[in-house]
Image (cartoon, rainbow, N blue to C red; front, side):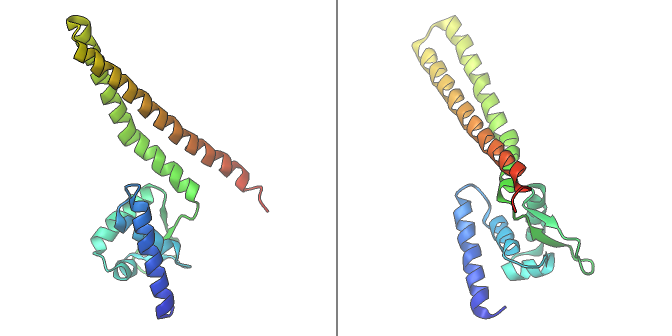
Length: 172
C-alpha cells in the first residue's frame, strides 16, 4: 500500500473515531474497528498495535471488548501464535448487539433507580403532603416516561435491524 493510500486510510479511521465518539465509543476502539474494516485481510494484534501506534495490551483489551460486542471476530487465518482479527461488516448486526448490551447494562439500572426513587418520594408525599414532594414525584414520573420512550425507540431500531436481516438472504 503506497503512502498516499495509507494516509487516506489513516485520515478516514481518525474521522470515524471522531464521528462515533459522539455516541460514547472510545477513540481507540473506533480506530481499531476502522483499521480492520478497511483492511482486505485480517490483521494480527502486533501489526495492528504498530499501525495504530498504540500499546499492544491496550489494543488487545479493546479487541476483546469489540469481540464481545460483535464488531470484530477472530480470523481462522492466524499465522503463528499471534491472534488475527477482522471487522464485522454488517453495521446493523453490530448496532443490535451494542444496543442490547447498553440497554441491559445502563438503561435498565437507571430506569430501576428512577422508579425506586419515585416510589419513595410518592410514599413520603402520602405521609407529609408537602408540595415539593408532589412536584418531584411528577417530575420523576415524566423522566421515567421519557426513558421508557428512549427504550422503545432503541427496541424499534433492534426490530428494524432484525427485519432487515430477514430479507438479506433474498437479495441477488
